[in-house]
Figure 1 (cartoon, helix red, strand yellow):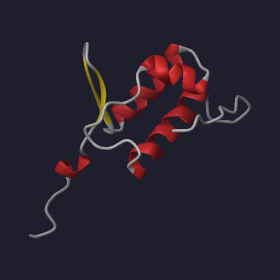
Figure 2 (cartoon, one colour; figure 1 turned 45 degrees about the vertical axis):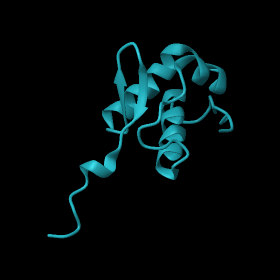
Figure 3 (tube, rainbow, N blue to C red; figure 1 turned 90 degrees about the horizontal axis):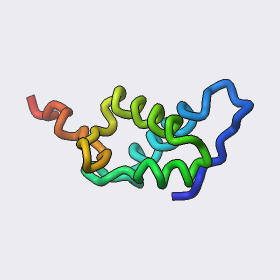
Length: 89
């Protein structure tokens, strides 16, 4: 996973840029359902931002239903295929 360059002059704040980048990785399958997300420390180093910025980005992903957090264990990619109704009706 290559580090995305944060554009501090962009209209979207850095946490939204990070959330968009991570969403793209989830949707492309680079971050597979059930797999752990990179740690906050890894994301801080990858994007060159503060820990609170990373936490805000992860909160957006949680609110969107893309990830879930297990206290003391980490954040994981949610398996959204289980949320989809069967195509056979």
